Image (cartoon, rainbow, N blue to C red; front, top):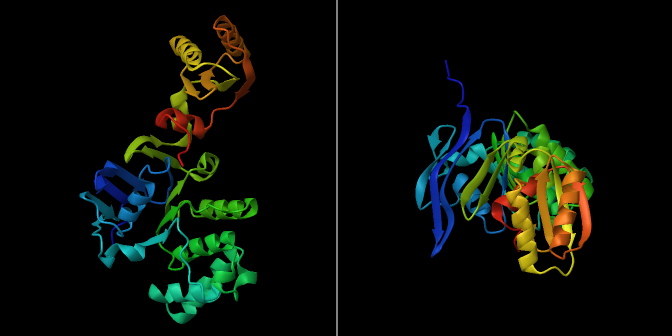
Length: 318
């Protein structure tokens, strides 16, 4: 009798990868549970793509170990590849094959018989709204359609593990919803790791979220638990025009001393409080005492982006 598959689909232990003097991934350890959708977030250059390339065996770590379904994955060896579907950030398609031909070809490359490859291709054409484009050459597709095809190609062999690197980059709103809904439909059936810089999308699809920067994990938990790091209450925002750095730093420091975790980003201050309008009134009074006049005030619910900015200390990098 065969044993049940392990509860951990992907295990990365102490992964490190350098490019000359740059440490892209720095002693990273991560367990991805079977059937979960893990959002993998970080600024540009945080190490997300490098990590994904190591997880699928395309890149050898300088040190550390990767296990797929309990078996060690060696870079350059094909043993782990059939279990993994990879949709890279850079679109990879065949320009002179039709959409249908590309899906069939990829299926046969993974060992499917011709009829099975055609059946699977038809399923994915329908799932990604590509049925009317089935006979179009890859080079004639728009960027958004190429992105959808790129994702579909990663799914042809029905892999139990799917790695998606910025799958919604360049998609129009309708395509974004289509891709989001498809990713959600995989929950509990396929282990998915999806990198994104869209915090809203990460909240909508992820069971857990991993935030990394400079190749190190800063947070790994459910969305609600990570947002809880900001404390109880809502987020209050204050924008100041023509305010000096020293005055804003003093105001932010005063809010911190009052027990309200505060982030300054340029002319903006963000902090969390359970006191709502009363806390905002305190800010206005404190600002006035420093000669500052808020240009805009707002109260809203906490988002994943608030935690992201607090942990990384900046917005998204170029």
